[in-house]
Image (cartoon, rainbow, N blue to C red; front, side, top):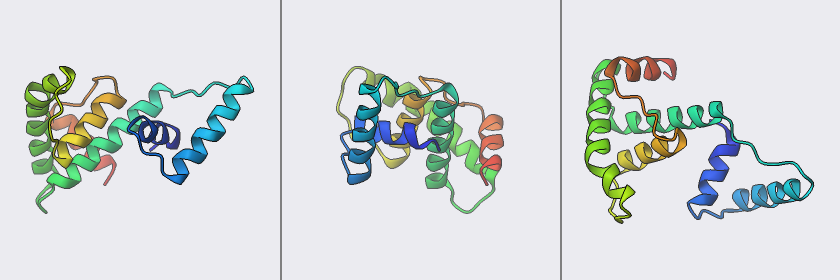
Length: 128
């Protein structure tokens, strides 16, 4: 996953661990020198894919990748129909670890989550 996106996401989430503080300090120094921070579309897709794979790892029960992709597709459907609307309304609801990874994936890709079992399977086999 792209380190720039990950560090920016952690800072936005309020994580100011030493590595995040060091990155922020360098980024702000660079900005003062005229070099803007750039997060590209490929950075966002890499972050989305990483978060989706992390969610899948939590759902993996030792069965086949195809079965995990199916469970993940169902979780994404539930997430988009139930959890995401509440988060968008500003509700502070407790998220499961899987939901937290799906929210990170949604935010990274600006809503472009993979939904079909086939595309999720292809992603999971690519990262296997």
